[in-house]
Length: 418
Ligand SMILES: [Cu+2]
Image 1 (cartoon, rainbow, N blue to C red):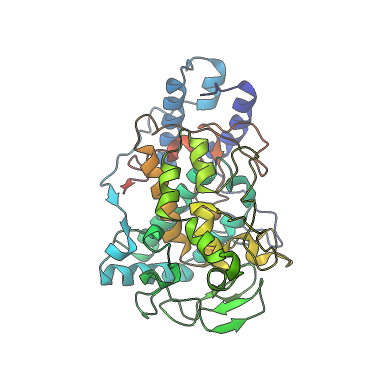
Image 2: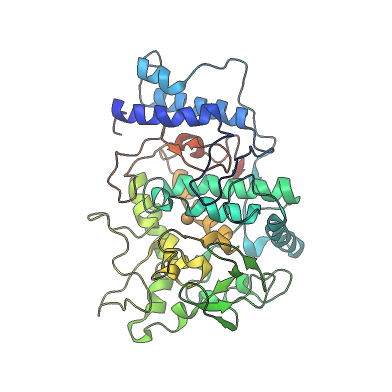
C-alpha cells in the first residue's frame, strides 16, 4: 500500500474540520439558500468517535506513529468522554425474492413514505426526504462515481437511506438487494418488475412521456404507478426498457447489456487482486486507460461493429433502463445534463445498489481484503491517490465520514451483513 503523504494529510485535515464542527450552518450554492439541520436519528457524536477510531486504526495498520504531528492533527482533539457505541444487532440483508409478501409491501410503503418527510434543508427545490437523496446523489456526482470513492460512498448512502426508512417510516424488515445475475438473460422478466400493485416495482410503463430527458414511459403499473418525483423538474417516474429490447438488435445490445451483469462478470469482479481492480471491474473501467466504458449504450451512439460493450455490474443494470434510473445518459442533450444524475428517483436504485454493495462485501470476505482501499479519485481520476482517511461528502445527509468507517459493514454504526 502507498504510504500516506503529508500533502494528502493536509487535505484531509481541512475536510476533517467539517466533521468536527458538524455543520449546522453549511449551505448549498443554489437559488434558494436553506439551513441544513442535523438528522435526529443519526448519532453524530458517536459517528465522530467511530470515525476517529477508524482513522486511528488505519494509521496503526499503516505503521504511522500516532504521536507523529500529522497523525495527531488528523485525529483531532482526543474526546475521552465519547466511546464508540456497539451494534444492538447485526441485520441481514436479503434478496428481493426472499422477502415475504408483507415485507415487500412494507418496504415499498416505507420508501414512498419518505415523500411525506421533511428534507432537513438539503434540497433546494423541494422539501421531501425522498428528493433529498436524489439531490445529494447529484451534487458533484463525478467526485464519487467511476473512481475509488464509488463503493464506500454508495455503501454509506444506501445505509443512511435504510436508516431513514426505519426511523422516519417505521420499516423493520430486511433491506433487499436485487441479484440481477438471476435474471441477466432476460432482466425485464424479473419478478422484481411485477405489476402487482402492492409488491411489484412495475414495468417500464405504457404511457409515452416526452417532457423530460430523452423521453420514456410513465410507470403506470405496479406499486409505484403514477409516482411523482421532483428532480430535476417535477415529473412522473419514467422508465424505458427498450434499451434492452430494441436498440440495435443486430448488434445484440441486449445481449451485451445482460452480459455486463452476468454471473461471469461477478466472478471476474470477485477475483480482483486490489480494491482498485475491483472498482474498475464493477464499473466497467478500462484498467489501462482508466476510461469509462468505451461504448455507452444509447440510441445516438451505435456500437461499432464487433464491439460488445461491457458496462460492468454497476452500470449495466442502470443502462438497460432509459429513464430516471439510467444515470446521466437519459439527460444527455438536455439542460440538466450533466448535473442531474437522478437515479435515486427510481426506487430500483436501492435494491440495485444494495447488490453492488453486496459484491463489494463478498470481495472483502477474502483473506486480507477487509481493510484494503486504494485507487484514484477525482472527477477524471486525476487527483491524489485515494486514502482510507479521505472524507466522503454527503452534503448534509448526515456527517461526512472517512472511507475507513465504511469498510466493515458489521461495525457500528452500519451494523449489517449479507
Ligand atoms: Cu450513484
